[in-house]
Image (cartoon, rainbow, N blue to C red; front, side, top):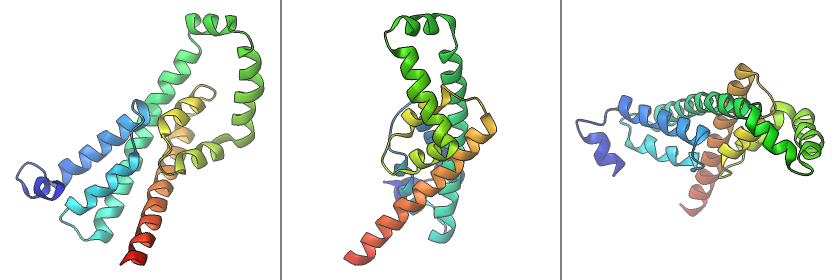
Amino acid sequence: MLTELASSTIATPGILLAVVFLYAVVVAAFLPFPSEAVLVVPFALAYPWYVSFPLVIVTSAAGKAAGSLIALRIGYGVSRSGPVVRFFERVPYYKQFKQQTLVGLVQRYSYLGLGIAIAIPFLPETTTIYAFSVLDNRPFVFAATTFLATIARLLLVLTVVGGAYSVVD
C-alpha cells in the first residue's frame, strides 16, 4: 500500500516525511501508538535504503522531540494548576508518593532515565514523557533527550529486525 501511495502523484517523499513527523508528534504528545510503525515508510520512498532509513529516523526523532515539548507544556502546567494540586493533596499518600518515589526516581536517573525509557522498543513513550514532564521543566534538555532516545530506539529495532531477517534469509 505504501508503495502504491509513493508512486501516486499525491504522495511525494516530502508528504510522506511530513506524515512521519506528524505521527511522531501525536505519538509523543497524545496517543500511545507504536512509534516503530514509521520504519515501513522507507520502503515507500524512492531513495536507496541508506538514504531513506536515516531520513525517516531523523524526521521521526524531530517529531518526537516536538511532541515531547507539547507534552512537557501540558504535563508541567497541569501538575501545577490549583484545582489539580488541591485534588491530589486530598488523596492519601499522594504527597508522600510524589516526594519519595517520583521525585526520587527523576532525581536519581534524571534525563538518562528518560532516555533509556524512551529507547525501549514497543514501550509507549507517551506515558514516560508525561511522567517526566510533571517533575521537571527544561525544554531544550527534554527535547534533546527525546530526540536522541528516539534515534536509539529505532536503530535498535532495525538492528534486531535486520539481524532476525538475515538469520531467516
